[in-house]
Structures are given as structure tokens and as C-alpha cells.
Image 1 (cartoon, helix red, strand yellow):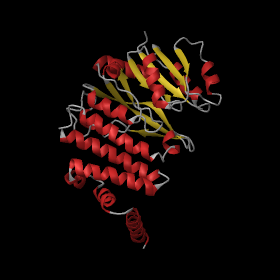
Image 2 (tube, helix red, strand yellow):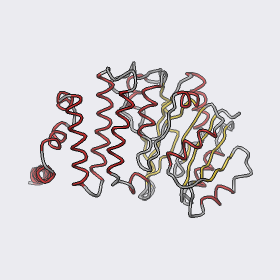
Image 3 (cartoon, one colour):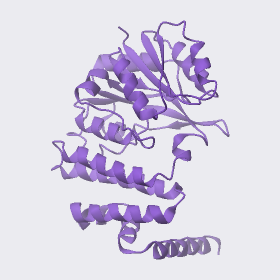
Image 4 (cartoon, one colour):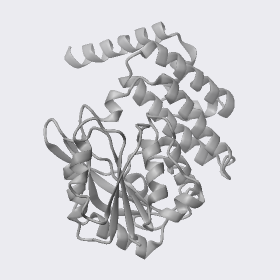
Amino acid sequence: MPEISIITPFYNSEKFLEQCILSVIEQDFQDFELILINDDSKDNSLNIAQKFAQDKRIKIFSKENEGQGIARNFALNKAEGKIILYLDSDDWLEKNALFEIYQKFKKDDCDIIFFNAYKFFEETKQKNEYRYIDSYFLKFKENIFSAKTAPDIIFNTGGLPFRAYKKNFLIENNIEYSKTRFIEDSQFYIKALLYANKMSCLNQYLVNYRVHKNSTTFTQNNRINTIKDTFFVCENIIKNSDYFENKKIVNSFLDNRLRQLFYYFSICDNKKEYFYMFKSIAKHIKNTYGFDFIQKNTQFIRLNDIIEKSYEIYELKKRFLLTKIFIKHYF
């Protein structure tokens, strides 16, 4: 039985998949299995994966195209490792990644371990350090924490996969990705952060996170109903947990969801439709959690404008403010 299972779904990933696979095979730590899930690729991805099929640590499965979330859930049921690491097919590991993750789990016996990453911008080939863990690390360093001990910052991280998990923790708490093809990781990490009793930070850069124009975030930015449904699915996770009466945890959750909502507002195609979807959620937050939370939110002015104004007035005010800033800056 391997110590670590790396789970990598792929769909039309021929450009990057070999680098991803090689980064696992060439690890300093060799007690692993790599589970590759072909999500009905139409390009040469499967042939690339099969070049490595002679390595008994590599398991290849093919299934109909249902999205990354379902593929990851499928792979988790096949995994034999004690530790689970999700690695996207366009990303790759630093050579010491598995060794450092294994040693950290051995030392702390955590449910979740967080680490840093490099952001690699495909078009410019620029590689930057991404301090993903700092929301926790600045307060706890490499010590143990949980939602109970970090209630006000527990959801300060995003859903990016710079974490490793104890497999039994995921199975016992039924932590799964959603069946949607878009923002499928939200319910997974909201539930994982709530239910983990022990989490810790590994202050190293272990993954290279590739940013390119074909990544899911940039090509599927107009799925408005999915964004709305995801908010309420995640809210129900909070409501059904032991923490719904903990105001700090609930506020951290709402801050997290609002950051996501504002982000997708900034990149979506149909801004008017998105605005009115956002308005319905903002009104729900106001009615459910009170105007006090909205006033304390760092996005208070923009959030209140969404609640109170029409789309046309909201856009007019935004353009006026941008013009005012431009004139002040240049004149």
C-alpha cells in the first residue's frame, strides 16, 4: 500500500501532461501511486499517459466526460494511499514535494496540510512565489490549528489545490467535489476546513501552478446559475455543521463567498444578468445575517450599491468614480 496517492484528472491536456507525470515519477520520495483519470480526451493525452503505463505505480482509468469534480471523486475511491494529493494536469511538482508532505504528515498527524506554490505564467514564462499559506502561517507558523482556534480567518484561503489530505479524513466525513463542471471545489474545501480537527502549514513551495488562457477559471466565467447554486450549497454546509452559531466562522465564510462573487463579477461576460443574481444573494445575506455584517465588510460600499441600486445606476456610479480617479491622477 503506497503512502501517497496523487490524483490527476486530464482532459485534452496533451501540451502539459507529460511534464506533470514526469514531475511525479522523478520525486525524491518514491512510495506513491499516481492515478490518472482520462475524462474522455479528444486529443493525444491518453496516448501520452499510456507511455508510462509500464510503471506499476501509475494507474490509468478512462471515463465519460463529466468534469474534474466527478473525476476526482472517482479516483478517491480507487486510491490506496494514506495521503491524498490532487494535482491538476497542467501543473507540476517540485522534486522534494512528496518527501516534504510525507514528513509533515508523519510529524503532525494532521487532517490537512497547506503549502505554498509557484505561479507560472505560460505566456511570459514568468515564475513568481505565491504565499498561499500566509493567512494561517503568520498567526500559527507551523503549529496545529482548526476552525475552533482560527475562526476569524479559517476561510481566508481560496479553493486552489495547494493542500494534501489524510484519506481517512475525507472518507469518514464524506468530503467530495460537486458534480458541476465549474467551481467544483468550493463545497469540498468549505467542508474540509470546517471538519478538520488538525491542520498545519508547510512553509515551502512545492507545486508549480500554471496560469494560461485555456485554464478552467478563464474559459468558464459565465456560468451564473452555478455560481448562485454553489453559494447556497456551501451555506447549507455551514448551517448543518456545529459552527453555525459561531459568528466569527460565519463571517469568515461570508467574506470568502463575497470575494468569489466579486471576482467572477469582474470577469463574467453577461454583467447585467450576473448583477441581478448577485443582488439576490446580497439581499439574502442582509436579511439572514443582518446589515451589521455588510457594514463591517471591506466591500461595504460596493455591496450596498448592489443591494440598493439598479444595474444601470451601479455601472454609472462605477464609471463616474473611475473617471474621477483618472482625472485626479493625471491632472
